[in-house]
Image (tube, rainbow, N blue to C red; front, side, top):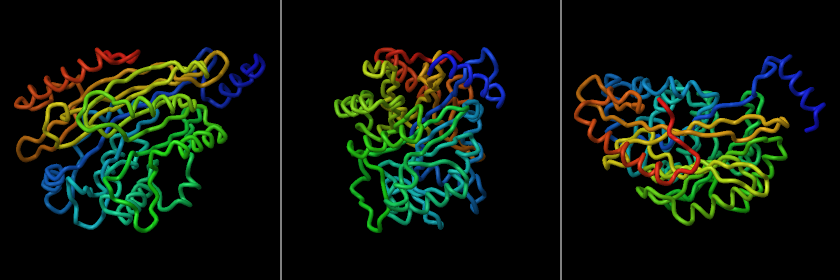
Length: 364
């Protein structure tokens, strides 16, 4: 972009109200990991709803202010919204629509649906999930009614504060369940991914974010397959790589793409957002805050990222529910669970301190 173009861009931005002279145009994003729904969570939500409905209204109340501060917030919805009254936890999940509603109310803007549990209720459940999310008016990517719809909706382009983002979502598999009636799942296929990244750039994407469901469950470090795929994505000129699936945190790194001259954020796993898992490393997760800014030439670039941790507190007695508790509000964790929180947080931060590259902890 030449000097005249920069001046014209700045003038148009000022006149349209997107920025003011001297202000650095940018966007702040938040990503969290796996939104699970185990049987005890279902039972508690039904109890909180008086037995006639499922009430999740207090699950995200403490972290909602952090989520809503972002210009755009992304969560991995790792349960189908199966409908009816036949909801279930592990191993074949199905959650009520009110669960997704609560996530929307907490401030999440984009739901990722390509994960190993998306076909737990087969094609019908996968398609009903899409219909339910459409009714909520929330963005979602990763699964589709059929291949033709995927061709129509991918790439998903979102204008955030005047910056055009492309979001793509892929999963390693679906627990051996295959579509029987043509539902389309975005699987990790390098040729397909490369093509959809190229389509994203042709559609005007300035920043490309790939959310990928990968890795080995319960392992606190990425494996070689993850590193290889991250390298492939970096070579395709991706800007953000956000991982999920292991149910525990894994390192975050900023690497430099020598070919493009850009920094790239790689987050191998953000762990669980909310769940009823019991081992220490699965009791919480991390969020990553990402800043995108335009450089002196007017080009949108990844600027920086920082992380914070939180805890998935279990209910204690009637009138309480599962709650996501930010690290800054650890005093809200029930006393009997605070030692579990301390062990989770110490383990997570130990991994981040040793392995993160240019992704520091947020200062609370």
